Length: 385
Image 1 (tube, rainbow, N blue to C red):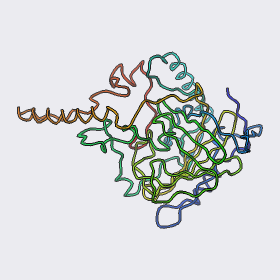
Image 2: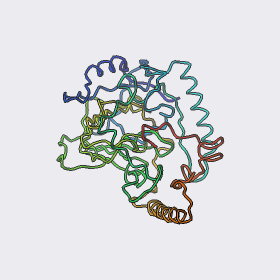
Image 3: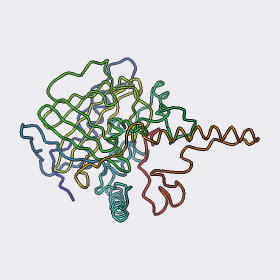
Image 4: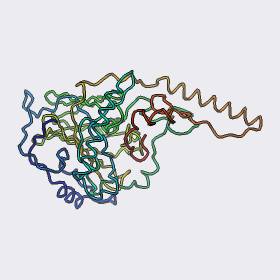
């Protein structure tokens, strides 16, 4: 078991309650600033000893390392209704989760062969949801505009697919966005943090994005400049790195792998990073997009060291053969449908994946998610993969 030393944990109920009072719905009123850090890594308990984070040679808190969300396995983004406003599992519920994590890790070790493998958690945490605000742990309702902006489903939906814009940015190997690159999925959850004076970088394992976060006091770039990952400016508040990101396009989303309803150019993310133990960074992010959501909302989760200590190359490139082949297959299906109609045969369009799942494995018995196969992916956000 890894060490669990940190300063006094914030009382979740008090923080969530205070933030709830400050929060307002998108109705022309000023929207609240992001809430303080909620330390979830210790299940609401106060550690016995105060942890002092190491410093870089130039005196800033040291966050460097290769971190992962693998250990958030079993923690859904949105809280199941059975837990109500309860952020943490009770002892009996936690024991069951810990047993599941242990069994999953043992199974993963036995099946970790071949070029395609899944990542398993090694450690259980008590959270009932990643969302810590609103207090019920649910994603706030979409605005009217927010409901009209689903991410294209590409080969994970039904055709016809007519052009590259019918595919998600993830499927096109362009980006999963900031949160799509952070939230745990079945593999590729590494995040490498590197620091130098005035700069912090984060490299995400899957789709190989790297963010450059300036901490030297410079302002945001012109709002006329829009980027998939926005423009990130950070500053230190004691041992916390606080990062505010604006300047987004309207082409990314918040869900797993960057799927879900797309956010707007008014999106603002406020992230907090604090090393609370030798092997834990508490990561928190507040999503504020008045065009998409009725109110801001916040997720908080522990980051732990990645097994193996290094991120692996992710062989995915923009404009890869999957698009050419998928569009070619769609045009072949157009011709086949027309030929069948000429013969008096009226049939539904054949789905793009046509019964295949992740990695091209059959989705039915013996395939992905079937008995004896790797476990299914964690629950997706609305519209997620």
